[in-house]
Image 1 (cartoon, rainbow, N blue to C red):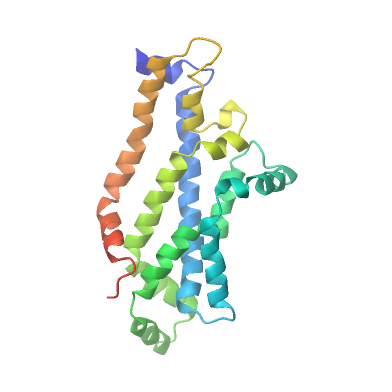
Image 2: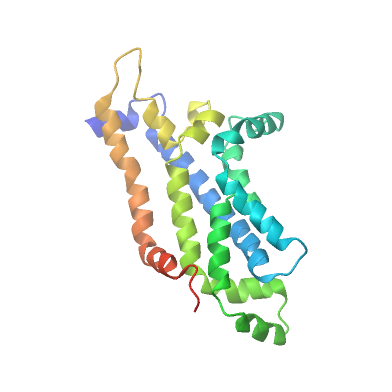
Length: 225
């Protein structure tokens, strides 16, 4: 009864919240893997002016709390008319904005012997083909690690959707759970706990599916081969 009430007890079915969270999470994973791996390849393999400076600047952004950039980002997204859409939650992932994953991939790429790059260059491969044909196939562990963390952090994110989403039809599962609690009226605790259990299922399934690659990525990232 609690599961049925939690799934159908709101103005909109809880499946909508699941779908919204799934779309945002999948798009975020694609964006992070694509852009962060490209940025990491540039820092790890390409020679360009100011590389060390920009790498240090990138690492410096890890020290900035999310709240520091919240107001400028909100003003920007408001001027772009992106408020109450998933774009503020997804588009930054396609701009290599997660410095943690860039650093993780840089350390992994540096552990791959450069002799492989040189052999590919002798065969006429461009930097793009080296990235696509040589480094990426060898980097599945670190890519899986980034995918798992991106999925978990995006799926569990409450603050971002709370700031940018106001229409219940765009709510994620975390905002959907919040609707069960009413400070001025009776709260449906049974429905809340039932849906809380269901929202954990995708995280467990995703983790179990990539568990082997995650452990391998943690064990080998930053180590010389």
